[in-house]
Image (cartoon, rainbow, N blue to C red; front, side, top):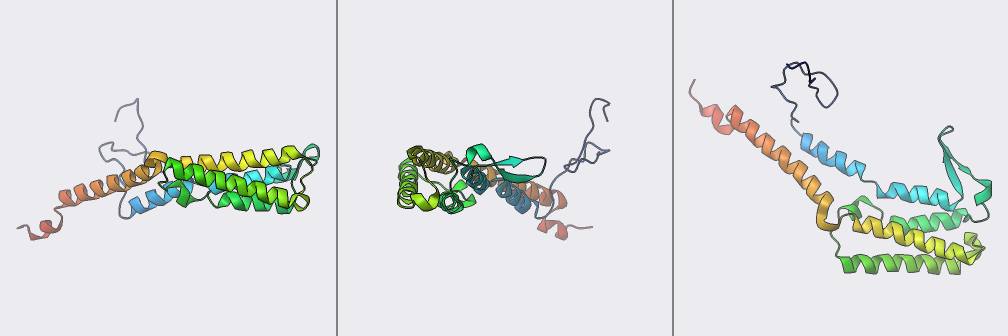
Length: 191
């Protein structure tokens, strides 16, 4: 082994024989697909937005969301923040992240969600804690922007191709390993 390089497996263990590279075994491709899907969490930002609508900031020292007094006069009520967040959750899912919507479908859906947020905020302004007209614009922009980004993310099937590529790579590797072992026909070899 060269002194310039150290070979490690995915867990960080040093591999003494660099000719034996780490290769996933068995159902590893299912785990890879699951690992990729676990990393795609558009619903996570909705929870952050909900806290921001409540006028809260995350404190890294206490590991908790805390109300910021200066933001409270612009904050929504619990009901308002929760209902706006729930509206965004309709599109902020793992399913929408791997969808294949067309541009026209995305625009219609985003406009519909933003309009619904506006209708909800206007009709329930008192319950939502809306005190100023600019809060309506703020809600609209947040809902519109988040929904647009989430629905545009899977455009050109980037994530779907990544997942499919992971599975295909694993299948190709598994097939080549079977050939090396002799596959099914290996058991009919003469000894």
